[in-house]
Structure formats: C-alpha cells, structure tokens
Image (spheres, helix red, strand yellow):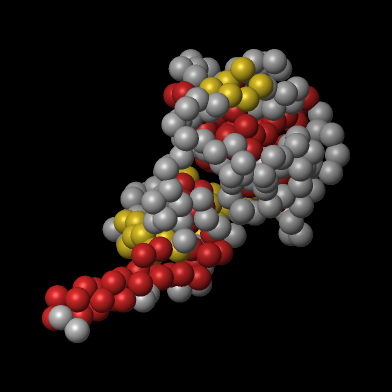
Length: 276
C-alpha cells in the first residue's frame, strides 16, 4: 500500500474516532452577575446538566470561572433562524412571563420592541428577539408558570398588592426587572415557610427587638408610592413567578454581614444576592 494512502487512512480514522465530548463541548467563562440559571438558559440546556458536567454541588459560581457546556446548541454549531417571529399578548400576561415562556431575557424582549415602559395589553403583537426558536421552550399557560413556587394560595387584597409593590420599589427600584420579581418572591416564599408570618403585611412589618426585617420599613421608604415596574413585578410574583428558586432572604452584594453571607446562595441578580 503506498505511503500516502496509509497516511490518508490514518487521518480519516483519527477524525472518525475522535472523542465525541471533544466535538460537542463548549467552554463558557462566567461573567459578573451571571448565574447557573442564566448560563443554562442562554445555551439551551438544563441547570442540572450544567452542574453535572462541571461537578458543581451547589449553585455557587464566580466571575472568571470556566464552565464546560455539554451538548449545547452553541457547541453543536447550532444556528437559529434569524427571521423575526412574533407573539400576541394574551390577557393576564406580562413581559416577564412572555420572556420566560419563550426562553429569552426580559431585556432582549424590551429591546426587540423598542419599548419605553413595561406596559403591554392583550392583542398587542410583540417581536421576539432574533434567533428565538419558538419550539425550544415549553408553552406555558398563565395557570402553570415555569417557576418553583405556585401562586399565592388566596387572592391578596389591593392593599397587600400595593404594599408588596412599595417594598419592591424601596428595595430594588434600580435593579433589573428579574430582581424586582425576586424581591416579591422572597416575601411570598416567607409567607409559605414555617417560622415566618403567614400574611404579606406580617412578613413585611415583622420585627424583633425593635429591628425590622426590611430596612425600608425602618427608615420610612416603605411609605413612598410604588413604580409601575414594581407593581407589575409584584403581580408576577403573586402569579407564581420566582426567579430566586425559593429564596427566603436577599441582601445587597456589598453587605458586610457574615451571617448573611454564610447562608446558602440560590442566585445573584444584578446587585442582589438571594439565599435560603
């Protein structure tokens, strides 16, 4: 057999038997503010598969950390359709719920439609961000949101909704919308967790030894009117949206409390740490 033919055969066989993992795995470098949930969503994989591929036992990751992305669309050379697809807003939907429904970020949905506010209405046609694959995420109805907590077990009063929205405004007015929903979810998670008061006002106004659980109650900011975005975030949280994965605490990433930092972290959104 000629030498050049043997070399060609060796090369072909080498490519054919190349380990599949070498061809199917991409690497992602963690950016500040990213979480396992955000990274898995961006690559179209599950959080569980991402944790397993990297030997992560909890949800803690750090900027600069390199993560292997198993079997992701990006690592398989996947190219999404760049044509614009649309969705029609249904009664009771919000931008947050639509973004979750199609597996895109809230910010990308706002940018794709040049929206100046969070106000949308039934029948409104929204552009989905370029590259959205409508079959990639489960189609979720209003009654079964993709969250880890069900909706509040009883209909809250308008006063309770307003109170929750005012707390969100005071605690997270400068944070991403997802963080606003997260603050509302923490309050509602406490309502359903043993050891905490069983009502929204009870959780928000809880105190011990003269110290309130939430600083805005202590300094009076809780009495300021809520923003429109915070009001919608309160409604989404009440409908069951929980981007914190069941957290019962939150604090700023610059907090100095050793007690807070010792708690298991569930997620970081913007400048807010959510924990259990």
